[in-house]
Length: 166
Ligand SMILES: CC(C)(COP(=O)(O)OP(=O)(O)OC[C@H]1O[C@@H](n2cnc3c(N)ncnc32)[C@H](O)[C@@H]1OP(=O)(O)O)[C@@H](O)C(=O)NCCC(=O)NCCS
Image 1 (cartoon, rainbow, N blue to C red):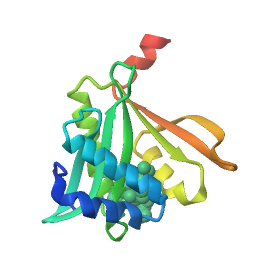
Image 2 (image 1 turned 120 degrees about the vertical axis):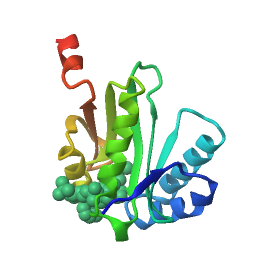
Image 3 (image 1 turned 180 degrees about the vertical axis):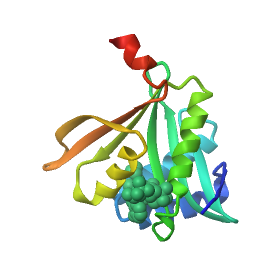
């Protein structure tokens, strides 16, 4: 199913909070962070950029990314969320593709994604892996005992980066 991708505005703030919480994957303090980042972005902070997926007028998902401080051309994908009742319909793929396209026109080289090793995130990890994200590092017990940090990366330069550092 195709959606339209548009900026996320103040009108989507409550819905963004609601659908992030509805995934069941994020603690209330993490949900609050997503909303705070939107507020920062709407306030003009270029460190956080949002793109929304809309089905008609309905806000069904979003991605949030930004330049990784202290790097050149490296970006963090901080959030990508699709309403649970709308998952598996291609919205997440369209959002991810749009973020990557945006970064490529912005001299982006590397996309970094941090996620969890917990079983609930298995579908999320599969989502990244099938879209060209390589598991680059895992830090045992990072989030909590038995909950590792898993870091994925995608080289948007298609190997130029790897050759340059070889
Ligand atoms: C991960 C996520 C953004 C993907 O969005 P989506 O719209 O469901 O993704 P698509 O429909 O484009 O693609 C579906 C793919 O995602 C995977 N997937 C992840 N969660 C899924 C779900 N709940 N339902 C269906 N597919 C899911 C499937 O493995 C499928 O892979 P395939 O197409 O390679 O077979 C979305 O499932 C989501 O919001 N998950 C919860 C929040 C999350 O984990 N965010 C990332 C960490 S910040």
